[in-house]
Amino acid sequence: MTDCLFCKIARKELDSDIVHESDDIMVFRDINPAAPLHVLAVPKEHVASVDELTRDHAGVLSEMLIALSTIAGREGTDGGYRIVTNVGPDAGQSVLHLHFHLLGGRAMAWPPG
Ligand code: 5GP
Ligand code: ZN
Image 1 (cartoon, rainbow, N blue to C red):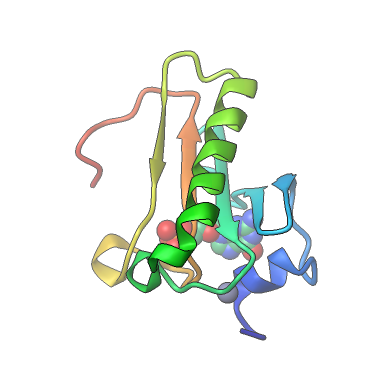
Image 2: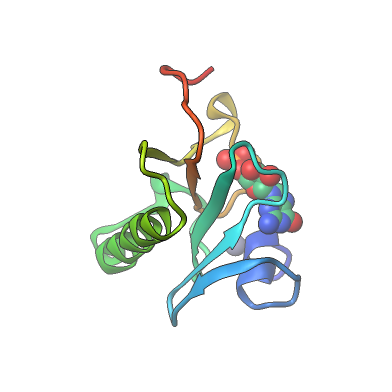
């Protein structure tokens, strides 16, 4: 996807504050953080959302979640943290490239709005 925002970040055509990178994933800080810790994990391959996942994505999915857990531990989220992904307009998905938000560093309400 040439004009997808997160594809461009993954290809480093756009700057981002990268926290972790591998051959298959990128984790970078959200430009408009909603919590003291707010990073986004994306696959480098363009996948629009959870709706496009297949079993072939199992490896990259676990890699993203384990990377977020590691970052949460490293950045001091002793009280816990939240990992969330929005799918579609009702959930407020604004970038159509799969991303997991990691939010931490403050108490959070449930259910989210
Ligand atoms: P969504 O609303 O799709 O679940 O989440 C998209 C997230 O991407 C938002 O939290 C938003 O702040 C973040 N975002 C949008 N544009 C950029 C950008 O250019 N760079 C970074 N680092 N984050 C972005
Ligand atoms: Zn993309």
